[in-house]
Image (cartoon, rainbow, N blue to C red; front, side, top):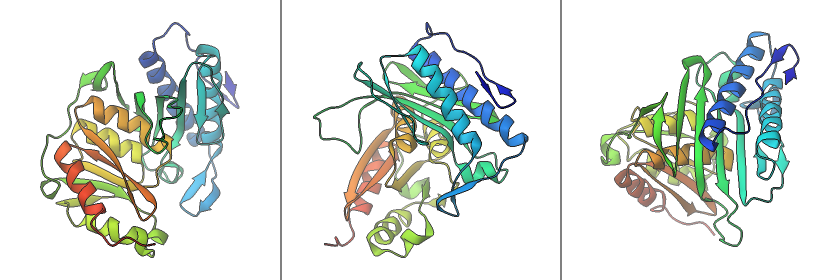
Length: 279
């Protein structure tokens, strides 16, 4: 496949799902990085910090093309608009560049991510579908997290197992909330209740990079509201494969996504739901 001046690898359909996911995020991430090196400009989506670039579109187009060739029966859902109905009961969820603001401004804290989920028709659990596997690749640091139901969590092929089962008051919590949401008590109050329960806070701007680090123990836990599937499912799969826990809790009509050790997830969930509920 050729995208502008950049040629990406055609993948072998005989790869298993984990090998395919690993190759897809690695190739997509390297393609985006090469395009950034050649010069990019961003286009605003919903705000000055929510942007998209030609690299996002090219990386998603690459993954879409490879999946349609390698897994023609599977569905596909992408952040930048890819939408293919499948017949297998499985869907690949693509985030070609997670942390686009960071990516566009020269930070290394961005990644390509993919998940394979089940199409849980009729389960009613639309906010948190069951996920088979996840892969996250941070190109500039050459970090590849991988894990799922049939694959222990790994970082560059080495087993990882999180940071243990400490209380949230003893560990670092990663999070993200847009400044406009901090002006809304429906989100500001639960966010504050969870934030003050942690030993320290980090806000880096890429949920999948954060979740990979929860899985490998660099970060203790993580929480964020209103995550689309492409920001949640790749990391969810890897955190759970690393022996961690995840949860989705609803507060004031919004879903909050939580990951970490079982104790931290339970305590963060309790903090988030401890605030007054608005009609």
